Image (cartoon, rainbow, N blue to C red; front, side):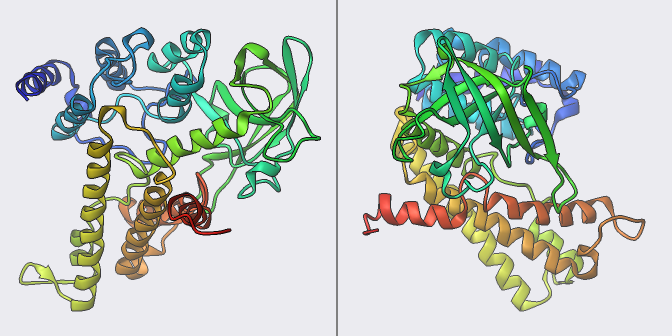
Length: 394
C-alpha cells in the first residue's frame, strides 16, 4: 500500500504539471473523446494532454511497455483513473483501438501483429472501426455473408457491413468475413484486419433520429486483406469475434462507457418539476429520482467489486452481458426521466425557445435508444445470460 500511495503522489504531481487547465471538467460522451487517427481535428489543449499521457504510457496504462503502455497493475490503473477524475481530466485516448481490438490482439495476435498494430493505437496514429453487422445479419451475426476469397498472400473481400460506428473517420477495420461458405454458419468465419484507405472501400453515413450520423454502411468491392492480418486460424474467427464482443460490452458498461445525459437528475427535476424546502416538490418524482440514483450507485459498486475480484489478471467473461444490459437500460431510464421531467421543454429540436442543454438532452435521449442495440441488443444479452451464465436449456 505504501508503493500505491507513492504512485498516487507521483500522479498528482504529474497532473499538476501536465494537465491543461482548459480541459478541466471535460468528461466524455459517446464519440466526444480523441480516438486517434487523422480524420478528426484535435485541439492544441487535447494534443498537449495526449502527448503528456503518451510519454508516461498512460494512453493505454495496463498494456506492456513494449507496445506503448505503462504496465500498471490493476490497483495502479484504478488509482490513476481516480486521480484523473479528481481534477476533471478526460481520458487522453478512447475508441475501439483501446477498448476492443487492442485487448483482442494482446490475447490472440502473433508477435508480429502486436508489434505492427498496438504501438500505433497507443500513439493515437490509427483509428479503428468494427465490421460485424450486415443487412440481414444483426442479432443473428453468424449468418453474415461478406466473403473473403483466398488469393495466395491476401484475401479479396466483397460484401457490406452496416451500423459501422465512425467508419467514415476510421483508418482500419477489424472484420468478420466468410472464408468457407460451405461450412456450418458458426464455422467458416475468419477475423481479418484491413485498411479503410484503399480502393474498393465505400462508406455512407446513416443519419439517425437524433440528427447525428455516428453509424455508417460500408461496401467492399475487391478489397485486399493481407494474410499477415488474419487473426487466429482461418475459418476459426467466430471464437475471436465473440471474445472481442465481451471487451466491447465491458467498455460500454464500464467507467466512461454509455451515454452522458447531461447534468444532475435531482437538479433537473427540481428545476422543471419544482422545489420545496430544498427537495423535489412532487413525491412521485422524488421517489423515481431516488430509485434511479440508488440503482446507479449500486451498479457502480458492483462494477468495482467485479473488477477487484478479478484483479490485475481480469478477464472479461459472459458475465459482461449482465453489465452491458443493465448499464444501457439504466441509461435509458435516466434519459426517459430527464425528458419527461422537462415537459414541453423536452420536446425541442431547434429554435430560440429552447436552451442548448435542453436540445442536447432531447437528442441524447433519442440516441440512447441505439445503445440498447449496439454491442448486442438487450434481448441478445438476456439470452447470453440465460445460456452461458445461468446454464438454462435452449
